[in-house]
Amino acid sequence: MKFVKNIVFCSLFLAFSLILEAQLTVPKLVVCITVDQLRSDYLQYFSSTFGEKGFKRLMNEGLYYRSVDFGFSNLSESSSIASIYTGTYPYYNGISGDMRFDWTQEKAVSIVHDINFMGNYTTDRVSPLALQTTTIGDILKKASNGSSKVYSVAPNAGTALLSAGRWANAAFWLDDVNGKWATSTYYKDVPNYVERFNTSEAIGNYPERTWEQSYSYYNEFPYSQRTTPFSYRFSQKEKDAYTRIKKTPLINSEITNLANRFFENARFTRNTTPDFLALTYYAGNYPYATDSTEYNYEIQDIYYRLDKEMEKLIDLIDRKIGLKHVLIVLSSTGYYDELPNWSSDYKPFGTFYPDRCTSLLNMYLMAIYGEGNWVKTYFDRYIFLNKKLAEEKKVNWKDLLLNAADFVSQFSGIQSISIPELSHEIHPGIYRKNAGDLFIEIQSSWAFDGMQTQRKKNVLSPLFFFGEQIHKEQVTRKVKATEIAPSIAYLLRIAPPDNCIDLPLAEIFKSH
Image 1 (cartoon, helix red, strand yellow):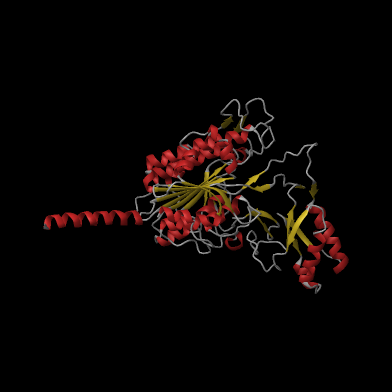
Image 2: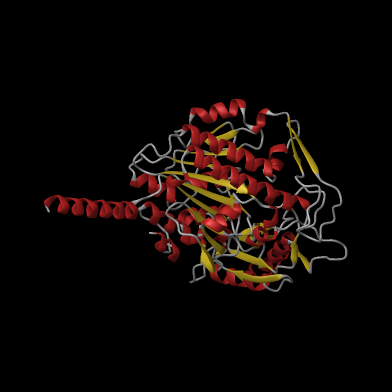
C-alpha cells in the first residue's frame, strides 16, 4: 500500500511539476522582426506566389492579427519602430519622425544624430539618446542585471538604434558609403564575428550586385505597364549604390545573413535569462523603378523574395537555436510610401507650396506686427515662428500663433492646422520639444512642392506571434501597435517599458 501511495504521490508531483513548468516557461530568445511598409492586403494578394514555410506558416501556425493601428497619422519608419519597441507614442518616446531640425547647424539632421559619438565603419555620428523612454530590450537588460544579450540589425541607423534602445549590447546598420555593417561608439559590445563578416561577406566587398526578376511574368495586378522582366545592377563605383540597394530584396538577404552570424556565435540561450534580437526588413516600393506605377513587377518580386527570406530565417532559427526555445514576433511600420506617378491625365487635385506659404505668412505678420523675419523656416509639415523677435517687439505670443494659424488655414489644400503649444489635448504623433509652432496637414489628394515626392499613407498592417507557447488564431479586430511591447514583456515575465500605455493583447493570455 505504501508503495502504491508513493507511486501516486510521484505521479501527482510529476504532473504538477509539468504544469508548473509549462506555466513558467519563457522563451530563451525573442526574435522581433519589423518589416518596413509590410501590408496586410499585399500578403493576401501575393499569397499564391508564397511557399508553405514562410508567411503562410506564420498565418496558419501562429497568432495572426490582420490590422494594427498606430494611433497617429504622421507615421515614418523611425516613429513606427519607436512606438513598437517602447509601447507608447512619439508624444512620450520623443521620436516623431526620421529627421529633426537642428538649429545649431540650421539644417535637417537624422533624429538619432549625436555629435558626441563617432561610428565604427561609418562617418555617421549617432546614438539612441533621442529616445525619451525605455524599449523592451532595455527592460530586459535591466531585469537580467545585464546578463541578457540585446542586439539589433537594420538597414538604417535610426531603425537599428531605436529598436535596440539605450542599454543594448550593440546595434548595426548598413553604411550608405562603404556597404559595411556599422555601429556607434555609444555601444561597447561590438562582436568580433561582425567585424569578420565585414571583412569577407558584407555586400560592400562585392564590386557589383544584381536584382533580377524572379518570374518572367507576374499576374497579381492587372494594372502593370511592364511587358518584359526587369533587371537592376548596383556597382560599387556608383555613389548611391547602397542607398538604392536598401530599397530592394538584396538588403533583406543581407539582414538574414548577418542574423545567422548571431545565431552561430552570440551564444543565445546559453544564459538562464532570455536574449533579444531585433531585425528590420524592407517591403516598400522601389522608388527608382523604370515602371513607376504602384502596381509594378518590382513590388510583387519584393514580396515573393521576402517570403523566401522569412522561410530561410525560420529555418535558421530552428536549426541553430531550436524553435521550441524562441518567440518570433513580426510586425509592420503601418504606412506605405506612394510612388510619385502623377500623369498629365491624372494630376493631383492641387499642389501645396511651403515656400510660398511661409513667404506670404511673413508678409501678413509684418503688416500686423511690423518689419522682421517672423517666419524662421518650414520643415516636415511644421512652420517655425520667431519667438525671440516677438519678445523683442513685445508681441503677445499666443495672439501671434493664433493669427498665423488663421492665415495659413485659408490656403487651398490645407486639411487642418494645430498649435502644439496651445493644445490641451495630447497629439500622440507630436513630440513637443522637437515640434514647430504650427503643424500642417495637407489634404490627401494634394501634392507637395519640392523634394517631398512621396506621400506616406497609413495602410492595413499585420502582426504575428509565433512560438511553441503561442496558440494559433487569426484575429480580424483592430489592435494597437502600443500593445506589442507589453505583450512581449508579459511573455518574458518582465515589466513593460516605462511609458507603455497599454496592456498585453487579450489573445496572449490564452497562450499562458
